Length: 327
Image 1 (cartoon, one colour):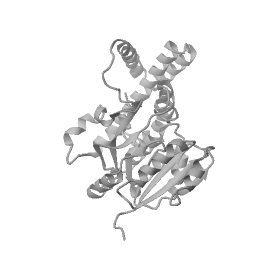
Image 2: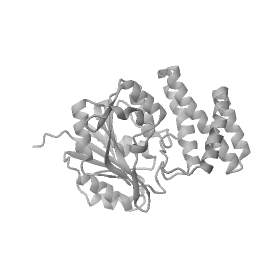
Image 3: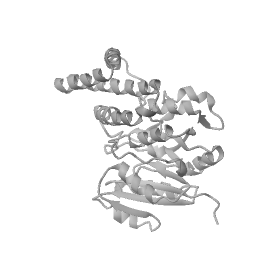
Image 4: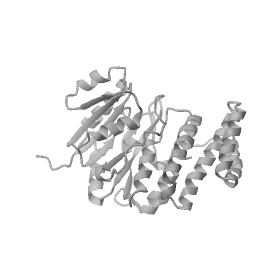
């Protein structure tokens, strides 16, 4: 009889049967064996159901298409494990992912942990994402036994500024998941949930630079498959405005300023894009009006910063790929 605690793995999918088999196989290949595998089909019209039926141990649940947050919430409803992990259906875990994460959760009593990953760029080329994440650099001096255990103040500051842990990167202690994925979010349902957890309790979080999974980038990725202006509009403007409204009663002034600054800079940057790229002058004016309503002085500061960034990007060709989770 196994002494390993049960891990509930939730895979949600929508018309990704051509990727799904690899994701499932990566769960089967885990060195950690006490796994409940839940597959939520968010209204697929391809052969996802037939593929799932080839694996009799999979708990398959079909629902009408409603987005990844609603699908994850349905999967969580059936989760029986002490720990919960979500794997996107186009990603793959390396064999030791769960073993290493569960060991860290158990040994340090953390609420959730996240890991480094290979980020595909093109033609099979990849790079180790967290090694280049500027938001994590201040904490790397605390690296011990391959892990960084974040202080609570650092956890709050980090997640207000960026989301360094996409869904496939995280393993949760189920008892710590006092909220669920926000179904009102267009892209940032996982980021929203992290913030809800972090600002609802004193949260212990750890991360490792060990590369334990692979993110495959394609045109149907919710985040990476979108154009940057779409990410700005959906994640850093629409989703972020909802997060600010939901969290502002729990944030102090400095914490609220961090979110508002990002919100304003995103509106200014999208306004610039609409003028330069799309010639949508009215839309740009409306964005700037919204920005001025939030904070006049911060908008005036953001305008030259965004313009300088645009000019520098035309002059300087960066050697490294830029971190997409907050720059």
